Length: 312
Image 1 (tube, rainbow, N blue to C red):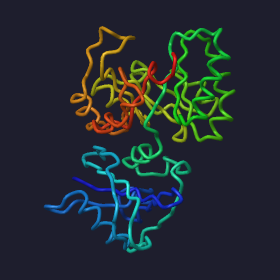
Image 2 (image 1 turned 90 degrees about the vertical axis):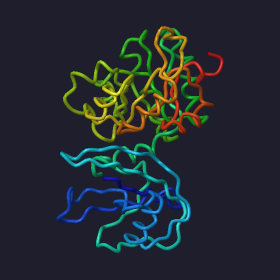
Image 3 (image 1 turned 180 degrees about the horizontal axis):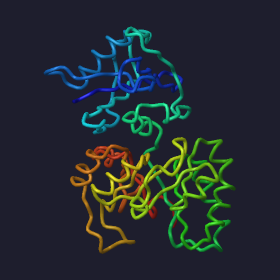
């Protein structure tokens, strides 16, 4: 079943959510307004019709956000989400559903219908995901604290602290030092592999592919980000089953760190990302200037190391 969903964003950056009414599947859960395509309809035409019927508004500007294949028991759907930034009329409930406006950062994913959670993350996640270099020695702690702080100030909103040469306690201390600045600027920090540290600090974690296998359930609350390193369709499916908020898929291109790894290339990346039910960053041979190319291939954006740190 092909379903369209609208992320209506007002001038204050708030998102409109609708509550599923009693008697329906997932009653009480909040979701993005929308509905099923009718025979012969394009997604954009269906979006315009549904928003007119549900909310009494006429769509004037809409752009694709993300497409999420999802399964509810034996019920399969393709959730085709659009970002709507201009419309005529004042949204109102025409089908008895409760409505509310919220900033995306304030929405609790736990209150959303499961298929709608990836849509929220696609709205909240930036187009760049810098990762610290793996060869940074502990002796450069002060230098990298300054570099990470500068990155946050200049606009980076998602950063992974991947510092395998450091004791875990030192990485956690770095995160604690950076957290006040990150919170002021709306940036999110993720620890690499360290679920316990992320849980204790109230921040995110980026899991290795091998960590996805033994985990039976999501290891952090929905308000703390979980990312997963993936390399194929099976690992992406594991990340989705675990409730990960996003994934990196690599290597897209040849990388200096893994020269023997066969690159996916953009066509294979696009196929895998389109079939994944979560936002996916392109990783491997990327730099920040490639974010537009990555998005055209179905990515949330680009992630990387070398090209993301000037003068590295």
